[in-house]
Image 1 (cartoon, rainbow, N blue to C red):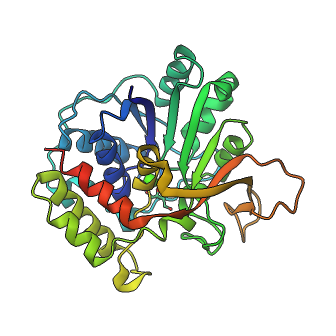
Image 2: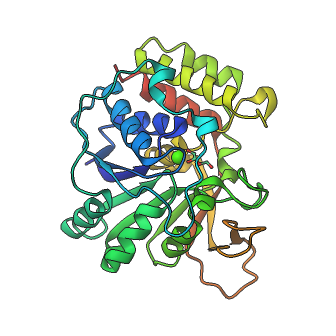
Length: 313
Ligand code: RIB
Ligand code: CA
């Protein structure tokens, strides 16, 4: 029985690869819908990119919803310099023909969770947590109905990637992260401590380039552009493949290892805003609220990615 999931995302190059991995795995994952959020790019672009990726995967049947257009309190700060203004140009994708859904993405999340068997739906958060937080504020009862929230975000043993202290998704909307972390929902966090081990090294990229299908070569092209756009902080070792780690965790959790700890988030300090404060050694009396991943078998993750992408058109 495939696992029912809702993906909340800000595509975004690595988000696009994560969406393709999910859509390539219908036996394990039933994508109930995709909700887009402002983050890497403004909402109008993330929403359009999500529909483009669904069509690229041959899945124009997937319902794509627009979520929140800005963080709860902070002004929106995008990563357009890295992700470009649209995936279309990078991949030569046409304007999406499939229509966006009229319902707001936050309402979609609430309605699905309220209508489903408690614990039967997994939320996958690939961008800032604005939509998830808004759903929890509007409908606090859904916290107990979430089967698992698997989120890309945070950092502890790695430093931040958007400030020295903060990872991008948390930094864009730290207040949303605080609401989600305090909700009591079962949370699994995939932080930079994991994704910085999942670099698109030349051998790993070569294996993706060798894929004969259109989606395989599209992903290789996307990762090439991702690498070119960044300041190449990892040098020749490629760039960190963030969001696909969330989907890989759902497909093969044994590739990951971590610990249940308390994670809190800084929402006030100008110096460390968005920092995830991870009580790894249990030195506070704060209650563990997150399964925090720190280890991953990166080569096996790339092999899984290649094995699945080749199943797409
Ligand atoms: O810090 C990495 C995260 O921020 C990824 O989700 C990437 O897509 C950006 O949203
Ligand atoms: Ca993302």
